[in-house]
Length: 228
Image 1 (cartoon, rainbow, N blue to C red):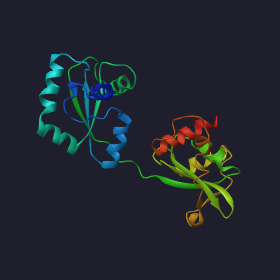
Image 2 (image 1 turned 180 degrees about the vertical axis):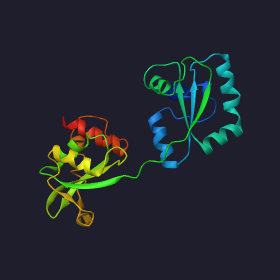
Image 3 (image 1 turned 90 degrees about the horizontal axis):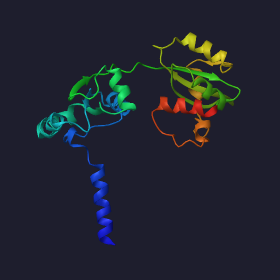
Image 4 (image 1 turned 60 degrees about the vertical axis):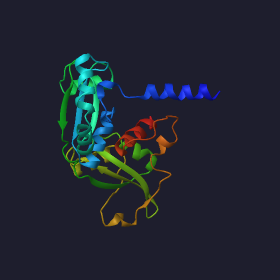
């Protein structure tokens, strides 16, 4: 029994081993996750477009350049490394297209330095039902984060939005159009805001979906979709 168990673990380990085309660098495989990490760490991304499984040239690059100890150390220290396979469909193909890189090509390394994330603005509005309005406001393109709570016994939604996408005045107008801005509070009035964790992202928390984790912006969108 112990032999079978050991062999099972060995097979799992082999299956999980990175392909030799990628060398010894610990490449991320989810591009969006790499973008988030790049913003958090303020490190540029190093994107490897690679053919996996690859030809002898690709394998040689992985076994030589991408396995050199000093190269591996510098890449993992100075960058957020992410690998995009240029020989598969799905998410990899979408990233490949966005960079205008050819498919089935030899390895290409591209350094990407993301622009600083814009400073978000906050708007707090009263709503007849903060569950409904958090979800409705979550459909707006500019919204990046939201939470609900109470101000003087009134249900309110606190929203953070990107002012590079829309102005404050336009955002408030959109909120009114959705019947989610009976009142707009000033910053001095929101000091008494009481956050309600159990009511925030209500529709997402009560949905059967297994997708309940991600960035704050992703949770905002998931909550909006869960309401429908």
